[in-house]
Figure 1: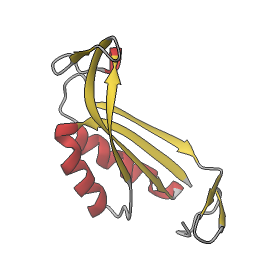
Figure 2: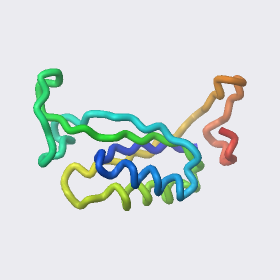
Figure 3: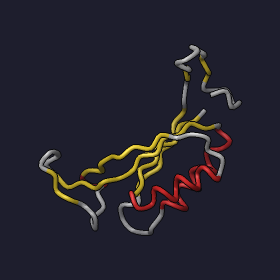
Length: 117
């Protein structure tokens, strides 16, 4: 199993989420976040007394998928998240060692390629 984390512009979130669903993503976590310092969009940043530096509002998308699906989902995020301007964001892909279903206690190994999660 793999985890994809993407940090994208707020303005691109709706279309990225919709296209991920069209591509077969069954569930994802979507969070509001703040990109700081060098990650802040130079055209859209604000200054924060809380962070004592410039920041930009972004959306963080997290999803878990099969290894075989990673490239498809990364391509969707990159295609529909892109504006061509600085601050478009980042996509990170990580391995998942183990997943535990809280309701049942079922443990799923990260090497499982089936859709058991």
